[in-house]
Every structure is written in C-alpha cells, then in structure tokens.
Length: 347
Image 1 (cartoon, rainbow, N blue to C red):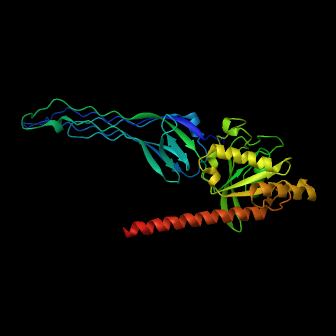
Image 2: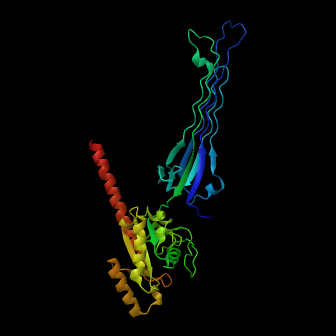
Image 3: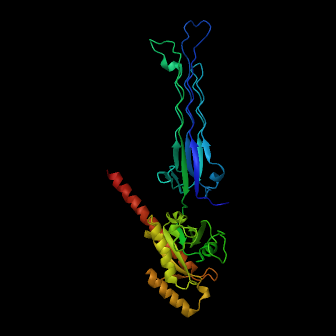
C-alpha cells in the first residue's frame, strides 16, 4: 500500500426535499383541506477516525463526496425521507483544514472520533404548514434548503510513542526492521526511506509504537532533499530517538545539523525528551569508538547509547530507555488528567 499523508477533498451535503402542495380529496368528505407533507432533510457529511488505516491513499482515487438529497414531501401529510449521509473514514491522527490549508476544522486524535463537516439542508414545508383561519386552502409550499459545499484538506500525522530522527543512512530503517516486524526499504545510499514507516517494538513484554521518517539534511526546512514535510509525523510522539551514524566523520556536527532542522521546524518538537544513540558501532575499532562516543556526549550533554542492529549490541538497553521515557510521560499525563478531574469535581 502506498503512503499518502495529505489529500484535497470536495464535499457537499444534501439539499432538503421540497414541500408538497396537495389537497385531501375523498368521497363523502366535503371539506378536504390541504394535506401536503414536508420535504425530508438532506444528508450530512461526516468524518470519522477508524481502526486499520494508516494512510490517506483512498482519497487519491476519489476526491468528491456528496450526500443524498432529501425526498420531496407527498400528499396525505407524508414527510419525505431524509437523505443518506456520507462518512469519510480516515486514520487516527488526521487533521482537517479549510481550503486555505491553515484554518483547522478538527483534529481526530483517537479512533472513534467523529465530526460533522457539512450539515444537510432542511426540508421545505408542505402547504399544510401554511393553513390558517384566513387561508384555509394555501397553494404554495417551501423548497428545501440547499446543502453546504466546501473544499477541505486532510493531513495525517501518525500516532506513535517514539520517533526516529537522524541524517540519511543513520541506520533508522535498519533499527526499525530489527526491533519491529516492519519491513522498510534498506539500502546503502541516502534517502532510501521516502515515506514514514510504523512498527511495534516489544521490550519486557510491553509494546510501544515507533515511527521512522525520511532522513533530514542541512537546509531541510528550506526544502533541501526531501525537506521537513514528514516531521509532522513525530510531532505527536512522546520521545525522540536520535540516531547518529558512527560512520560520520564528525558525529557532533551530524547531531547539531539535525537539531538545527528540528528547531527551524518548530511546533515544540525540540521540547520533547530525546534519547541519543551512536549507531553502527560494529564497524569501529575500540579507540575510534571511544573518541566518537566522547565527542557525541559533549555535543548532546548525555551519554549516548552504543548500538549495532547487525550484532544486536545495545539494542535492549536503548529500547528500555525509550520505554522508560514513554511510561513516565504517560504517568504524568494521567496524573494531570486526574488533577484536572478533581478540580472540576469540586466546583
């Protein structure tokens, strides 16, 4: 399945059905009077986050969604049936924007979240509605109201616990393939990863989700390379796992390059906890390895994990470190929610 994280969609809710002009005509009924029914309501357009999706690829092949028009009213005071609604099904983490691509309409973070994007038009009144003591035989009815139409943008930001960042060929895809069942493309050239990948890692019997995005290079925030368009997929993560390849001549510079791009992107991404790892250490001799670990420690302010996806060295320790940060963040979030509930309950 191809990955698509942005789509432009046209939506239109259904028009309301027209009211009916009708008069009761029955044998032995001298004064029948009006009996035109109201029109049915037009269908709505909804959007809903569902399970089993992690891309917006469906909206590459269908961009127009229209709800059904309400049925017209009929004689004998019969109200027209309401038009069928349309529901756009999207992955959790999808944001909906107006046509200007800046005004946020809704953010569907959790599975089951729903939002009505366009409301169907009300049905028109039949002539029964206009009957009065001075107008006992009205010969007019209302047309149904028109539905709403608009163009919207869908933007997906993957929901993951941890995000992998680093320069191209830092070993992110290899790491993801080693610790999860994901099968990203792996090759010995830059920008092997062209779209984000998700995988579920397990450590000590507990699972968490990792997201791997294409590598960043200097100037990514200005569109150099693949740019920073995929950084939105690590905005929602609880921790960043910053991989620096030991093959880099200057590991400190490699680290600072990525951090600069993260800072230029903004959106609070640099405020997230960060776990740093020196990858591909199996290719270094002991002395060079010590030097690079020392240089990276000085640049990051923390002791980097030394890992090798090939030999398995340090992988368990890194996963436990990520899991610890994720658990800590979830506990803090739960405590905050509990305190908020307690304050609300006391009011």
